[in-house]
Image (tube, rainbow, N blue to C red; front, side):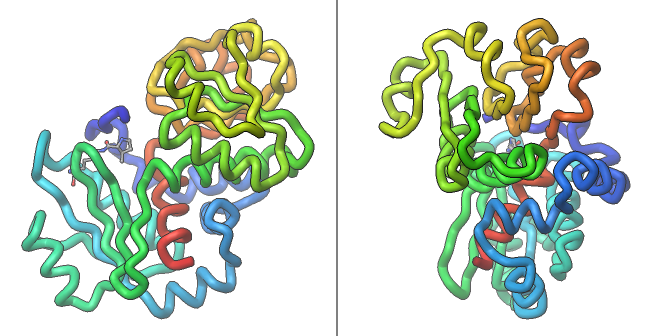
Length: 268
Ligand code: PYL
């Protein structure tokens, strides 16, 4: 998992409205709708949950410490979904205690290994990689106006890629997987096609999930003319030329879709 830095987040809270307008233009869905599709709940259920749950986001100082703006941005994404959300004054265990004492029943917190949403009422715990994969799968389906029966290539079969592949199979898509790691390729499900050569695969698939931590390994000439790319992986796998050519059909963000889908899954 690539660890975010303050620069990855700086200014994004202010631009959340612009981000959502762009997401709507590309997918026909707003952030809540992408999250509900990925989380398999209705917008009505999400609205009901927003009236019944309060959310706390706890800064965690372990490992490399807090990331400037991280918890504040997570809280603003959650508020964008119509929920009350606060960042605790305290950090770590004291912050968790503060969040629970203030009757927040959903707690978001991240150390360097795990970013989770914990529902204290139902005891559900949702991991960011799982939520991110499903959310980006839903966003790609929105952009493609449905993926049932269509072939999708998932690049990278880690926690995010495998969760995206699960969502795509549920949506009726024909899923193909490429991972440079042989062991990960062995973990793919029997109803997933294994692609042994990435360059050859990129030339035949129009629908792509870039779930790798590699940056700038895809050039414009690698892709089909109709390519649509949902890229949860950080950094973006498209190089600058490829992004320039396909930017209207690329979905990429450091936290928004993942956090939104974690919340939908946590209350679902
Ligand atoms: C959740 C992000 C998505 C990609 N990489 C993950 C990451 O950067 N994890 C580390 C998060 C550390 C947060 C820090 C804080 O500010 O509370 N402990």
